[in-house]
Amino acid sequence: MIPSTILVADDDRGIRTVLSQALGRAGYEVRTTGNASTLWRWVSDGEGDLVITDVVMPDENGLDLLPRIKKIRPDLRIIVMSAQNTLLTAVKAAQRGAFEYLPKPFDIRELVGVVQRALAAAKAPSNEEVSGDGEEELPLIGRSPAMQEIYRTLARLMGTDLSVMITGESGTGKELVARALHDYGKRRNGPFVAINMAAIPRELIESELFGHEKGAFTGATQRAAGRFEQAEGGTLFLDEIGDMPPEAQTRLLRVLQEGEYTTVGGRTPIKANVRIIAATHRDLTQLIRQGLFREDLFYRLNVVPIRLPPLRERTEDIPELVRHFLGMATAEGLPTKTIDSLAMERMKRHRWPGNVRELENLVRRLAALYSQEVIGIEVVEAELSSAVTSGEPAAAPESEGLSATVERHLREYFAAHTDGLPAAGVYDRVLREVERPLITLALEATRGNQIKAAQVLGLNRNTLRKKIKDLDIQVVRGLK
Image (cartoon, rainbow, N blue to C red; front, side, top):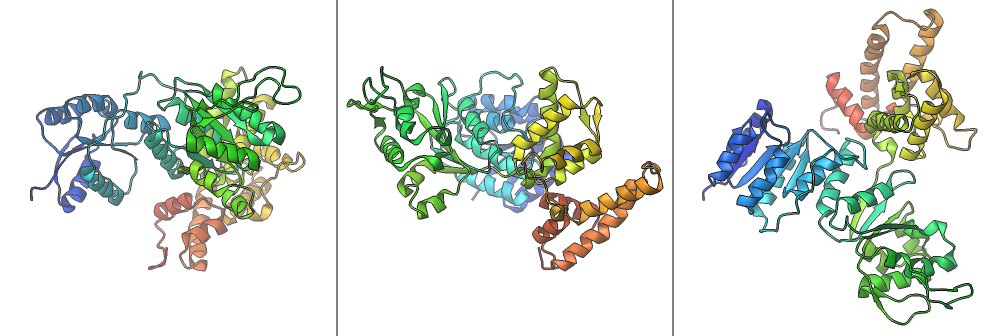
């Protein structure tokens, strides 16, 4: 049997070598190049059974090459890899015909698995090409592994009308995800209509959703269109779906089953042409067990589940989020500010019970209320501490973590012995010298369990992994 040929295009020689070796061991023939022009020549000549291409190359953007390849060889599968790990990159790759998008760095075994699926996949129609190449304001911010998985999921959903259930704590950005699904999907030219179930009196929800006829109830002096009618041809976002009363759940289930509804007081069925996206911060499975939410409605809505991680699970995204919110504040006329490194580290240790919304509010206060151009740790510490008196939960002292405790004691030491001005580099050097044995001790105490060790240290698991690698710490053999 003749092995499949994989064409690899990446301007990084190291990546080309790694992919060539890994795919060769998997039984494939591999040809590699560092530019888009050679890849285009190979494809034009009918070579290759699969393409793996980077986005940024010296002679042409890999995303710009995709439509040309799909035009002459629509059945050729293309895998896009990129270090530009944003939602827009994932969406453009999907809409221009990519079989899969992989953010760098990626697991080589995952790549081989994607290659196997791509070669085995049946012929499928190409996705619609994105209109325009200008830079767009990204609705979602973050390059953490958790956000990368969400970007990939969203990119796969853009060309579909599947119902989506978004779950996550308050403030994680559920409506932003819903808007991204609409704005980058095939219904983007239609309306996006949102309704929050928790904000509407229970007796008015059916009228709000489905509209009512004149005289349908006391006060109904004229016909009113409901949210389904307003969202015709577009997307209806049902926020806090867990607060929907049982009678409204029954009517919504009928719409999803039959594709039509009637207004309150009306008799003529109306066809519903909307995409449904629901969201909740509540545990719907628990509500189902309590008899407060219909199980059949749950399965109708939960066709594709998306869980948004709380900010404490993706603290590596905080610096990028802070820069984004500072930029927004400057665009609104507030003074330009920056956050120093110690203040940023303090933000990363905070538990953020209000998630991204809490972070945005903090950054806006910093931009509006303080005169200094560079915001230091004292200001951030004071603002986070004041959350207790304002009724906003703050990070508990016991959750500070050992690394944070060591860092705090070092600051106190320097403040007491050097007027807070240690010699250049001393602070970082001492912290590094303390950090390695501290992490080693935590790993020994947890028998090499990195999840538990990260919790003990007050670190994000990915941060701990990076420190283990950077400090060359040996984890107990046989334990993870």
